Image (cartoon, rainbow, N blue to C red; front, side, top):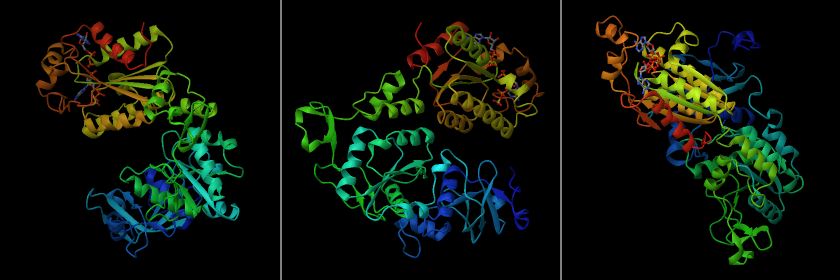
Length: 502
Ligand SMILES: Nc1ncnc2c1ncn2[C@@H]1O[C@H](COP(=O)(O)OS(=O)(=O)O)[C@@H](OP(=O)(O)O)[C@H]1O
Ligand SMILES: Nc1ncnc2c1ncn2[C@@H]1O[C@H](COP(=O)(O)OP(=O)(O)O)[C@@H](O)[C@H]1O
């Protein structure tokens, strides 16, 4: 659907813009009233006051700057249609202030929003409800919100039951969407419904973690949103002191109830408050690192730690490395040996079996996916982004993508790394063959032409190559045979757990 489809005639000529994922989540929460008293994106004064002191200019407590960044050419309009990633119009922003962020120099627009239609993008949309609807359906009395970006394991389930019991509260679980595995998170929480107190509700809320916000501000934001959904208490982190429990959060919209520490009692094989366990029998829960290690190796997650249905969802979000999607991204000068090693690696992986492999070679991509692009910086970046997009999709589906473009710019390589890592794993191989050797090889006669000035902007001769400082492996093929070079990459993949040793 285009931005125009379904728009009233009066709005057809307005420019449209798709905000980034955090801004889109903010937009949804602004439109549904979850961010009340906010009704639109903040102006410069409010944003500065919020950053400095956690309050809007009128003194109302507000924890994080809710702002909208746009390209400079959109700052000349009075109204702007904000649309979802598929181009569906969601709201009209009436611009009351155009301002430039003093730290980032980004252009921002502030102003109230006029809703066009309820956002309908993202998984589990049918469970996403308006805060006023949810609040209206909750029974009278205390409501304990559990606003989480992580599944609840047996320990947290016990803590939720204990706190809810103590407060006499209905439980409102709010999976906070905006991570890389939202569906798994929601499914893992739906799977423990039976372990939650009777009448517990599960309502996903789009609230991605904000890169710049500290944990205390994040807690305050969660408390504002939870309050809008009708919660009277927000479950906080476990209190450090045994028996401390129930501390109030500073500056939160509703009190933060902190559970007392729990552990697994290895003697009677149940989770319970540490205070009730003989010290000799206290067994801590798995650390995040231990859990990730088990998942990476495809080992079962112990049942004492989490219910099997949650374990299954953890494995969906983080499959064993032998089955997890992987992108091996080669970068280096023309003639450095990228294609030769990439092809050798693809063959070796196919010979070993068990993996589907797609080779996105520089030359081949240029003939198909990126046909028509030049070697200007903008076109090279677009070429690399296209390769990254395809590699990320292959990775998302558990395949191995092997890419072999020059990819001369560090920032663009970093962008690809981010795209791929949202879907699986990423390995960067710098084929660091010295320029002199690449030039000596000059398989295609291009260096000679570049030196003669016949090819402008030739990488390494008349165009930049930014050496990576984040490579997982560096290969100098002037000192290796192609077989040895392929062997080095395979060794790395075996050591990393992505490929079975032979
Ligand atoms: N100006 C200029 N600079 C660099 N390379 C050039 C240029 N013009 C053509 N070629 C040929 O194009 C291949 C590089 O394409 P890439 O898509 O890998 O380049 S980039 O990543 O977009 O910079 C590269 O192939 P490889 O030798 O396989 O790297 C060259 O053969
Ligand atoms: N160890 C090695 N690894 C890869 N290529 C090598 C090696 N030693 C020599 N070469 C030769 O160098 C050339 C590299 O070309 P190619 O793989 O197309 O590089 P690129 O894709 O980086 O342009 C080939 O002719 C290849 O035979």
